[in-house]
Image (cartoon, rainbow over all chains, first blue to last red; front, side, top):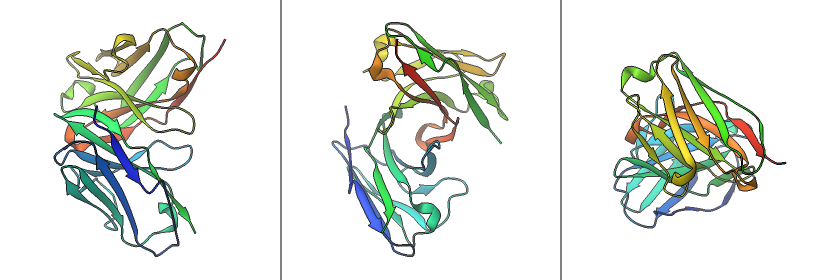
Amino acid sequence: EIVLTQSPATLSLSPGERATLSCRASQSVSSYLAWYQQKPGQAPRLLIYDASNRATGIPARFSGSGSGTDFTLTISSLEPEDFAVYYCQQRSNWLPGTFGGGTKVEIK
Amino acid sequence: QVQLQESGPGLVKPSQTLSLTCTVSGGSISSGDYYWSWIRQPPGKGLEWIGYIYYSGSTYYNPSLKSRVTISVDTSKNQFSLKLSSVTAADTAVYYCARDGGPMGFDYWGQGTLVTVSS
């Protein structure tokens, strides 16, 4: 099973600051990596698919990069509504796979 | 706008079978463009993909749950369903259904339904 490790577990930042979230896979997943945002009491929302493609309606301040085993989600300037938990998720051989443990972005 | 809605009992006894249904509106399961997945999240914990079904009935399950999971589809009702057998307290979770666009990710989700396993 491919394990996804997200770091840091918690990121304390202020609105307007840049957030950089990391997701590392235990083996290559090519570019088959997605990022989701989840707020309390809500379902996750797709942000990024195929490592770097923004989903429909996602603001340009969200960007994804990486391939193979190392991936990054960047929020260029945090808005108040961006404080949430972020999960990465891999697909190997096109099949849905594991999620990472999540990174909580909290207000400093 | 595609919408998904989970339904089913919120309380299941240990050793029994958990059964949930997801009703899809605003889009047809039979279009063949997507897979249809179940995902769960224990309280305060992370996400776990359970399995998916295609409109044709073909399925793929998470190997860790495969022996207990059955996902089925009813295209006439635009619904798909989850059965998880021999449940324990560890199966207590919010269960989500989601539209699975393959490499394009899970792009639409239901609101989720909490299922508690307790006697």
